[in-house]
Image (cartoon, rainbow, N blue to C red; front, side, top):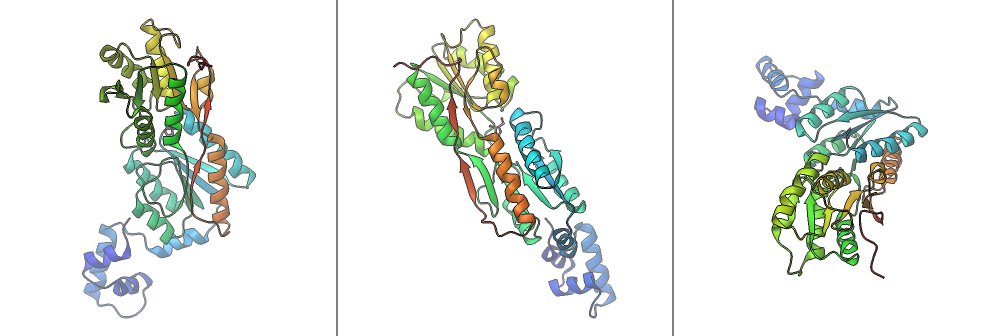
Length: 333
Ligand code: RIB
């Protein structure tokens, strides 16, 4: 985000001089004024006074920037945000970023101009400087699910690593002797944490090998493609933990096409607890995130901040739970 300091540096003047040019107050030489205005234009700088007016103008509208509205996790999250926002008298605008930082930055720019009252981000590309800018310009935000390392705002997410440990231990308790992991995209903090949980749960087992971790890109197609290579290398795998339900669903299809019986030959556990996981055959065992609660909390918190209520900025990690269904064997009693 361009700041007044960037404009001053580009024009070779002080911040105070830029401020005088912006406000048309005090003396500024003609040449200096030209240099400052040229820098503002080149840097596409939006003076804080405009951003401040955003914070002061209320339009009753909030925006939600999601990485993939086609993924049922995010559409279920969006449903919760909209229900809560509507009950609070707010309209919601949804923006789909495809996890592209450039598209998210574009949305931030557009949303700033549309006097949005606040923004909920489920974003991996949002950096600390974006959060600083939002805070500096008093544009209320809440980050959902995928949060940059240090966040100067409220973050609402699930206990990803603990949920992964839960999944692997469940597979072990049902008799699995060699468990693989289909991992989400390495750049996403949620995928990193679930992989960390998987590694923690399999640590010390002699059967573990790095080649038991295969990428699945958080997609159905990715889960489907991951399985064939995995079973060629490890035909004796009898348990798979997939880092989200979509990859688990893709893996299920590939396993069944390869003639494997689920759970007799291979047990399968997903992560998310999206409604679709109830409709596979067999129904998918999964680690359910409190999706609706995450969306409800995010909207409630954002509306409180928009209304000027003193709310503690915090990182809220919500519990996940094992939902046992028929894609894993019954526990040995
Ligand atoms: O399924 C999409 C995944 O991306 C979910 O697990 C959610 O936690 C997000 O990180």
